[in-house]
Length: 493
Ligand SMILES: Nc1ncnc2c1ncn2[C@@H]1O[C@H](COP(=O)(O)OP(=O)(O)OP(=O)(O)O)[C@@H](O)[C@H]1O
Ligand SMILES: [Mg+2]
Image 1 (cartoon, rainbow, N blue to C red):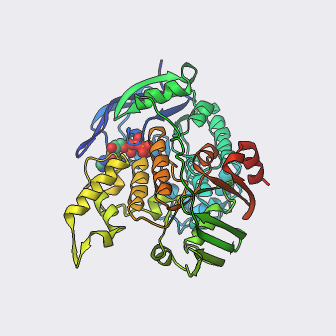
Image 2: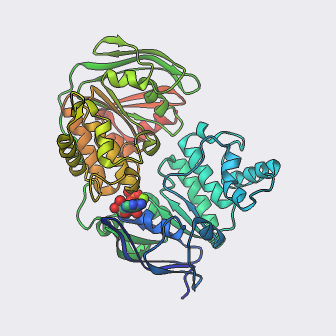
Image 3: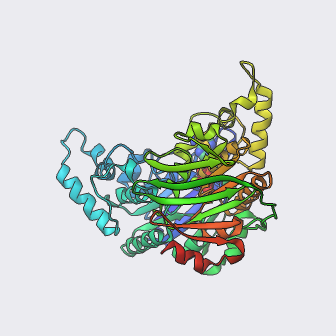
């Protein structure tokens, strides 16, 4: 049988890392094929080779049975291979239409850009995807979910045979993800082969027809989805038993540590008040776009146009910028971690140290030895997969970058720590670790706020859950009253 796409015995080495070791991937025409594996298993690297972002060291790539050499991103696009990367690679200051037609501009270099055609083309492709986004909107002003849709739309304007989606659903709501799956199925029905990368088991079982599993850069195997269940797939990925949720430890909940009163953010958050106690884990649920991120950013001083008051340990504090917030002992781990949480051209160690500099300085000198010890500890405790603490942060796999951002904040001993989607992009094996670490923080008396779109996660780790809907507080649930139905109902109120 001829496959639409066949990658044979692909190997790729980076300094100190064998990212891929003779991996084979075979995808039929019109097939939706999932590539799965833990953080750092080699999924994105394999896709980057296919999309021309990286050159393979060894191996062969066949399209419809014919060998091709992919030497650059443009040569992949020319061959009909479209890619939506894990980090979206959009240009934030440009409009939606300009981003979607960016690749086309390269081809028509020198020719005046036809504004009208790009606007109409943009409307077409977004309409096809069922998206209600204005072509003239600036990408930076869009939600992460809409940005993701734009990144996908950009690929679809081309004539594609193979579509690569590297964690496309990581910032979509379940409804938006379902809409994407509908699009994927209709593209597949038109003969496009789709490679779909996701850490969400239910999505893989929902949409994929075949699955290829990677572990530590090696191929574990390929299966039809009907040959697997969740437990066997996870077992193939991890090679050991995993617990998806760390059992919630009992923590004595103390005095009130944070109170927010009548917080509003124009257009996003409408008069929200609540309090948080020492050792408490407060979950914030709701749909994408409900204003959860805006609410926590407002508390952290990271959004303009906030009104309302914030009290820490009973005392009113002025938090008008993230610097103010940090000074007051607040920490915030944003959902958009790669952009907002990481110095991607600096080493793992520098990232850990810079955020905690006062800990490591003696007078004007930085104490290198303790920097190294602490960095190694963070790498070990967060199980960050890296050849050394000297590795440049952007060379880590997506999930490992997430772990690094989480890890550097854990050192700070904040009074209140806010997580926005803490386990997005984190593999099934590492998730329980993150939950355990969040539990540890609470045990040390920190007040914890967790925003999450994953209801099981929220219900698993929280003492109390607040739900937002259209910017308003619509529900409050104590742990003993948690049921998925009630919380969902309040979220859609
Ligand atoms: N440019 C690079 N330089 C050095 N090492 C790299 C580079 N790109 C990837 N790696 C390493 O290759 C390995 C595989 O990374 P890859 O990004 O393919 O993982 P992944 O399976 O996509 O993981 P995730 O689920 O976290 O996205 C990792 O150990 C990573 O650190
Ligand atoms: Mg990846």
